[in-house]
Length: 121
Image: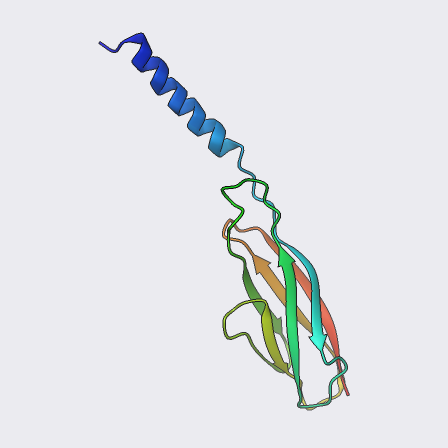
């Protein structure tokens, strides 16, 4: 038969576990800015893209979670070798205004998306 002390200790551990994990809240990452250098750019030239994002999770359990970056463009070639916040876009041979998007996600499926317009001349 379990003593009252053993039951109380097990209940305390269970309650502590539930409170610890139920208080964890994942905030979505937030993109602060996307920069494109140069902008405008000449046809066929490259543009350096940088996405500045943060994840302001308050829980110490989530503070160090890594963010993943995905760059998307409809026209031109984009390369992000390390799938990080940097990418290189090669402008198409047609002048115009082109949209480049960055999608930032955390490991708990929080995400943010931002788009920058780059002028090709």
